[in-house]
Length: 245
Image (tube, rainbow, N blue to C red; front, side):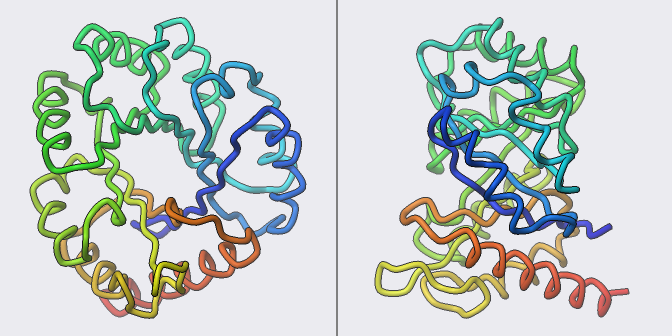
């Protein structure tokens, strides 16, 4: 298996969206692809385990992670339900975006639930300042249960992003990448606003291991186009890793 696992990030913003997810996944049936489900706290709480994971088993696909933004309505019981879904997934990972102002007591609840179900929780700050605060909190907890997820498009360039990443690479287990040209989504491996070939070489040199999630947060993209990008990235990484060996 690749040390760096390419993942397609799919937004599912409503309960009806989960009903539609099976159809979306059917277009990559039996490819063994990895997928991140990007949703919200409220929507995920309304879904049962089977409603989220069954389609992945049916189509021979892998659910890498569940992602939602931290909300003031957060509570341990609700998070346990989301952890139960992650427990039945291939990636066993929950990503919490915008965690900068999570109270320490909520961090403790997140840690306790994650440790109980043996799932990984990655906190996804959106700025250098937020990253520093979250990193300081993570360091207080042992066992490797908590980690970081970082997003390329939160930073102005790939060079800036790798500069930030160097400080946190050891506990970073997911990276979200994208690319734009003139404000529109662009292919990932053609340098434009971001230079992803350079990023991939950096990650391999630094022996990064984790998920590399393709997600365009600033603009929606067609699923089929995204899946083609996923296959391209997967082939490119396999070629780079083969050359390293």
